[in-house]
Length: 79
Image 1 (cartoon, rainbow, N blue to C red):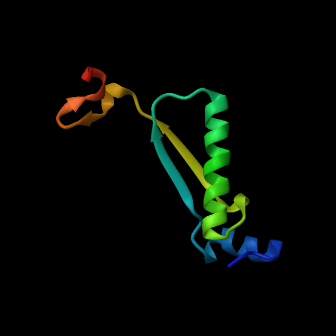
Image 2: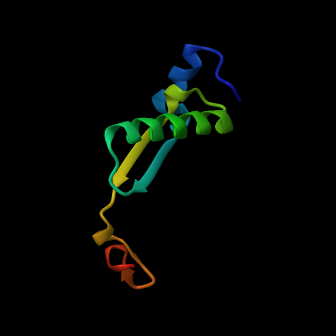
């Protein structure tokens, strides 16, 4: 449910409730893109899960196309 007080949020952040972590693998992004992505993911997850935005952690992992293969072919080698 919704958190109605700071004490309830503090209980959740102390480990009495799992803290949601959103992890996304992306190509390289600039800072503005990362800010927008973080804000939008947090807002959407907060709405769906019914936890305050302050409870979410977002981790952005930038992955070079040389480090990802699909169907046996590196993304950097795909046409």
